[in-house]
Image (cartoon, rainbow, N blue to C red):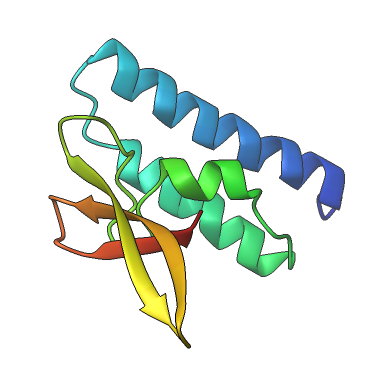
Length: 103
């Protein structure tokens, strides 16, 4: 019997919460990135958009949980069409990718 969307949504949130908990407790679990990757794969399969709050906690490219130790955060002001726009740049130190968020 195939699982319903609600059960899969619960599984997605459980996997991500578990990975964040393991990272915060510093248990040394090497599978935290795989839990997050599995959650994102399930969300793609059922066409479910993961909330923005979770996207800010997870690196899109290497699925690492963002912490103060593996992320640099900066507020940058740029001019675009003669207007100043503020961005938050999150630089992942594990895969060297940058996520730019409009503030």
